[in-house]
Picture 1: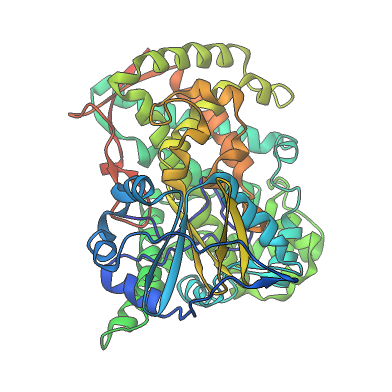
Picture 2: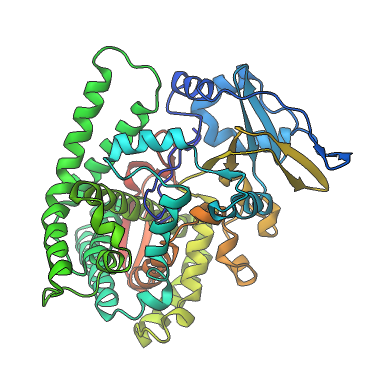
Length: 512
């Protein structure tokens, strides 16, 4: 099924909210209702100056019958649709049209050039109606921003999540290593007893711990299983709220689920947020608190302190939800690829690289140069299995996009559906794009990945995501060998809000 909610490709997808929802929703009914709610006029190419535009409408894609029949199977059909209809095509109902695009360069052009960082002229950006539903699910203040609301939030994050800034924090690097050691202890115990581990659970606890350290400048106590429950309930609530029509009592049930989800995460972060706010007001940081992202944001942008505790709490919920679950999926996929028998050669190469990295240890000055091989492995997993295989946006005005020598007209109010999965499995990423081959990244840049998005809403947490992979992968791969349980190839669960490893990625673990 096509992904319909984005939590940053692998870390944070937005500066103030993490969700990006496709018009194809959890069920066929929800999808049709959501699409029908976006009424657009069918337009013809407009005159440009004294001449007529040579742009044409995108070719027709799947018809309404095929579209509805494949809604729950869109993950499996995305590449098929691209093969049948091309890199750009249009699907529509009588009340709405959606342009699907799988070309990385054209996707970047739309997000960067037509989005124009929400400056005039801005012809592309967020679906403003959708942001209201996100605020309903997460709380006041958390709707994904655009224009000025986006601008000041983005500026408050400027530079705070770069590799350079992250590596200046010895406390953060030490916390990542400690979290990696805790994972290794769990795997050691499993290897000693022959127990099967669910790798995604181990990564979920580590990634959540890393997010709390980053946000608050110290480790927090939490129940990782409860936190996963909270995130799942928030996603289910959002999915339900996206449906424009509800049965009697249905919305009340969704809001009750939202309240329960919020109570779980708020119990962890609200006391810490209140204490941090008091420290910022007094100018006295707690002795055991390292410089924290939230502290930097509050000091850099006074408007954060003016939004009120409830709004700040909603923003923190968003940061936490966005910052750990998708990253856990991504890291699990990475280990899962290396556990497949067909990739033994890559697993052995990765082990040798990991041993070399661990022999010299982690030093901030040399960490990036020494761990490029781990980044390549992580990139390749993200390329083949992006946890969010679809991203969306809306055309605020007519514009044109060039693709394969032709100009295509994108009409105002059209929903843009960026097919990340198909785009990243294309020849744009080199030879044999369906094969797992980390060496392809020796000639590519991570910024080419569609999964991190482009333009105003490119993932600000991508460097944090990469840093976690560069630290944890060598720690695990240098000490353990992994085997899939009862299957030859990793299985993917595509029926939820994200692509995720089926059953949490069951693995047998062997001490090297």
